[in-house]
Image (cartoon, rainbow, N blue to C red; front, top):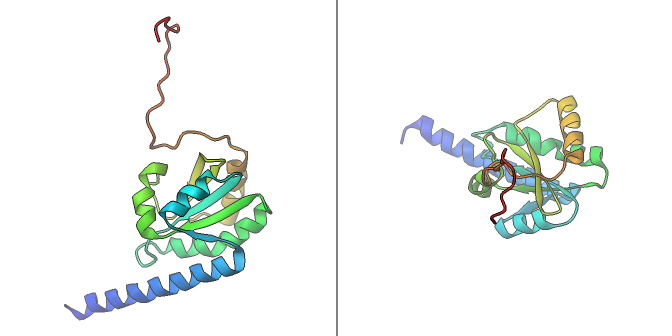
Length: 160
């Protein structure tokens, strides 16, 4: 193994360890939950508004750090209205198709068991405040990856 590859592997592991420490601090100080697969389903199905940060490995997607760091400020912005959680990269990759995620990191918004929308990538603070306010007003809809909505332009048929 070359020295460059070896250094990269060591650096990636250090970044992962530091990111896990950040997640521990967020859970302890900001009531942000780290979810496993069963926890994600329970979180989505719970009542009220929720927001889940879909992370990626911090050495591969440095914006993951930035979005994780601002989550407590997002919660302050919304008062007690918004529950927040984070899912680790492995689960995020597994669940990305379910929520139509195409870019990391992503904030997925849910309400009362339904999908509301997603804010992907890092934004400046003004954009976040505007987009989060819109998410809190937006009705529950269909996640982009679930089926194709069919709309008929013809008169309804008598056959069912």
